[in-house]
Image (tube, rainbow, N blue to C red; front, side, top):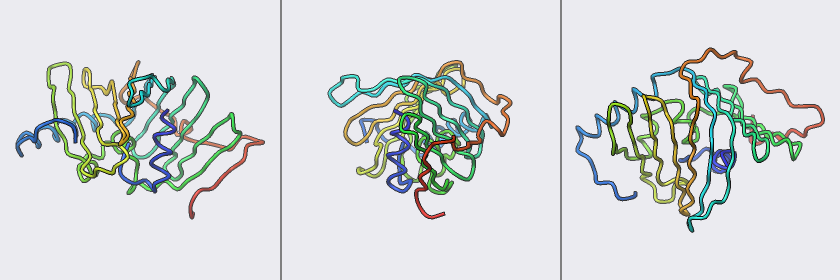
Length: 219
């Protein structure tokens, strides 16, 4: 699930990522794709949505399914809350990243370093220049209502080799990440809102009573 995506990258010190068959575009086409993607990702300062997530193994069989909500405010604040099949929360408050697993009665806290964000966080924050240091960008669909972009990792050992983003009516509607082992995670956003009014309290986290706190890394 999404917690795994974030945790997988966090365990690698926020290293690159959350090479298929697209042809290289010309410099002009690349610039157009970069300009369009940048405009779409930077058209909002806050974002909220419900999500459905499915992870499929390389054999094509469904491995995991989950649902939940996402709330985000730039820069570097978000709350990713999984409601089914098991409650989990990932909260970035601008200083720390909190990973809370109620079933384990455990919270992990890590420093949030904007310079080494995970790939999903860079996408949601609209950090295009940082992304293009690690990925090549192509655009395979561009209509009045829908745009499709693909990021392909330059490093064959990157955690995620291919990332696709679908925008519908200029709103991010689908995010697909394929890892180096061929496992594919697709996240579909529903009831998305751009620039909703959000209270700072939406990104605050307090360790619940009786829950163990694990501090990961030097603070």
